[in-house]
Length: 266
Image: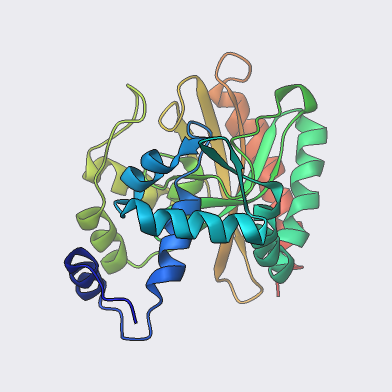
């Protein structure tokens, strides 16, 4: 068995993982996750710096991923292949919620001509599980699997509203609140008030906090027993639709669609 580096031993102890924890698998997934819209192609050295691993370890992992079809080399550069979507497909095909919600997003987009999405909260981040946008506004980097912070988005705040007060306090204690735009609220008490208002009112609204020039409204999606399983939102540019229109026109449409979905979420 390969001897672990002192860094890896310390990291394992910090995470509290046991002896059966697979460092090789963790490293492979870490390497996959370094790629993004800003880093579509990287050299071996760049990847090694990103994941803080020796070049030899990264090289072996890249060769393995390439042989499995998940990675492609172009000279000194490495990039992901479409086969990487097989991993996402495994989740989506096992998650009936996505299958139910995707048509709803498409209906809303067709009716409103605006982008719609559904998301869940995972590791205190909002993760898109369904999305639909008008053809002329399609964005490749804001699709299924895209992640955003929970504290500064309508989707995130409605999802956070389902946490107990204790868990909400723990979230704010552990989460660095950073500005994504000049309008992002970073005062935890103010954000908490927004979350509690979302819990009371059954919807959340955020304006230019996650992305400059955009605002959105979101509502919860619940199972028959009342437990929240996801959130549904409509987002658009502020010059196209006013706040009043968002709340008086789009929000009731979201609630109507959510009510229809709630009867299907078992």
